[in-house]
Image (cartoon, rainbow, N blue to C red):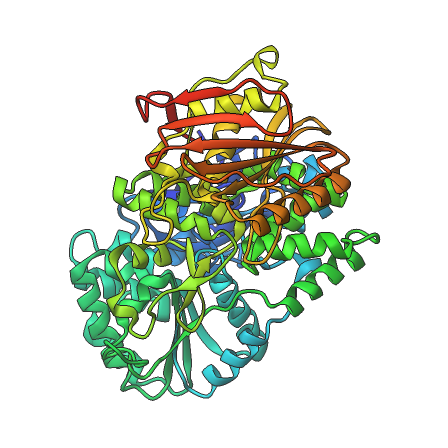
Length: 640
């Protein structure tokens, strides 16, 4: 029970804490003032607000369904409708028509008093893994050319529809516009289309206009009065709309939204930037760069990835403000290549480097051993999306992982005619349009999520004593757990036998399911065309144990010699023995082995067309021939 005496009729107000999304309910009188409200809120969460006085709490008025703000992936900033700054104002004047269970108050804690800020140094929070260039991330803010260019055209009356994968900078762009417009004293409304959800439960059309009118004009108006306000605008009103793809979740909502934008497209003083996922392609005309009516006056843009120059600026800011030693050039290259310019992935990797400060030779080990803990809600959501795919979709995605860091051709002349699965992968942010008729994985982090989610692994983990120390024994164990369906090629090229990168990913997943965590793991280098990297490395802590260079169908003297030349490079770099594993069809000609086999173990693995039988032997070392026969494909497997 509150110590603050209620004045007038009692009402319930649902509140949410900005920092941790904790939701709670308080009871207060309509006659009480906002100073009383802060005291009641502090009493409602005494442990969380223990280091903040009641008058230091920051309150915003809002009106949104709790399930929307409870989702930490949803940006809360668009719902900060009005900061409550007058302590003498009454609850009655501030909150009108309080009905239902919507959140009505967002509570912020002074930055210096946040419990999370006391647990670790403040600079450790400057690099965020929640998304790119978050507001107030301070030392790592840069001004993107795309932001400036679109803002300039937007201020001249041009509306935009912008699509991009999750955490590619779309919401950050809206915050950039918001901050800029506040400085320029322009009229704007910042909202998320998902916020309409709680308003349309009873009547979609009425609820849509209730929500939009409140977000635009801070009062609830019907459709007629909403448009009357819009046509009576004397100065431009700029609408910033996040999660615009939400209009497609309900056919009736989509039609109502189209009616709304059809009407405002004829108004003189209202313009909008709407951002969302690739789903917004559904607004395009078939075989045209134009959008369908009523969005045809807006320009359709893709949110660009970070450029090399922008990532260079961020590295320099990192060195200037966070770590005077900075990130060495070779590690900068690793982070750039792994992130592919995807803003959230780049920030995750920079955060990972900041926390561990690895050397170049330790980077892959640190990355793989800790990446899962640094992945944010979006990456977890991607994994959930993959798990919900049917078998054909998973198989398609699994085969796409063969491309790894390469880009591949896709007909993009008419985005409305893409295959359903390609459309889906672009929409959820697994794939990204890289160039004209070229796509690729949005980032290597996302590629790693796809490999982990689509390649089966062992259902039984070994103890340290059970892990074979002999590289051929370990390979034999891995091949026993191979699912032939994941490694055989379904495409016209190389119809029979395993695909090299699929074999790499499959053994990688199996070994990591077998090896005892966290001390032992299998590392994998992701490849691109023309690059030569060691395929798999078994490690124990900081010690490299076994290295595999995988080859499939190497039957020419030239390719065979190249395989040895690459292995010698790996051996010199890692100062260890390298196992070349060459997968060959049953009928093949013997090849001449180079004279110098120092630090090289050649392992030949003959297989049948179905990859259900493997014969393992070595021409360079005295290993007993092993035969692996797979009878039941899925018997020993589980997905990661």
